[in-house]
Length: 300
Ligand code: CMP
Image (cartoon, rainbow, N blue to C red; front, side, top):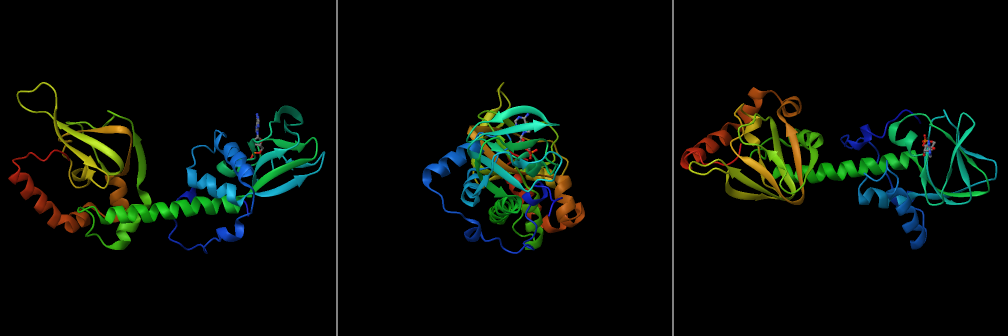
């Protein structure tokens, strides 16, 4: 049961796992308790990087578990199989029998062994009778898997809309979808700098970016155009060693891009030569376009 880290399950694994039934795992609770549980999860420094839907699913699937006065909820050194939120009563954290702290009500605990696949870093003891909301590790992992799966599907449909890639066979697109990374940028962050070497390819999944380029007679790079969700840039880096031909800056407070480097692309999709073959038509068009625009193509 133990020995499965939370990390690998965050990747879609091709659907070999039986579908997890959230309906069965869901436990009825009233709205005010749901808010308290969700706040407790969100304020935990290790859990708060999870997205809103993951926290919601966790809240839905937590079940009530009571511990008697003097009982150990967690024992240091043991493998962990649950995450808890303290709902009522007094619980204390010990390390090697030394009292570390008392856990405030509506706090998450027992998350470390689950998130980092380590043994319990401390013991937690019920000092009075204690009521907890508890989440089983398998359910937690299924929530991670479900998110990974829906991300995978979302990424796949994105890829199919990218002219550069849409001719690739489905199984290759699926591999790409699985190794895309999501990156975030703030207003005016440089995503790409003109003249720099680069081997990463970007697809905008949220927000807008501004393309600028050095222009004769101007000191500052000049505005070329905006690119938006679904647009992509840096694609030539997948097929050539050219330096970047334009700047790409985030335009807006939270720009999200799906990113992949050439090495990953080659590893997952195939060799450079195979890729070149696949993209021959595309590259030919691109070159034609470039010629037509007199090398005005803003991005590579
Ligand atoms: P985990 O290691 O899974 O099990 C024991 C839990 O005790 C741990 O996760 C944390 O939630 C909690 N814990 C560990 N160390 C401390 C600490 N110094 N202060 C508060 N809580 C702690």
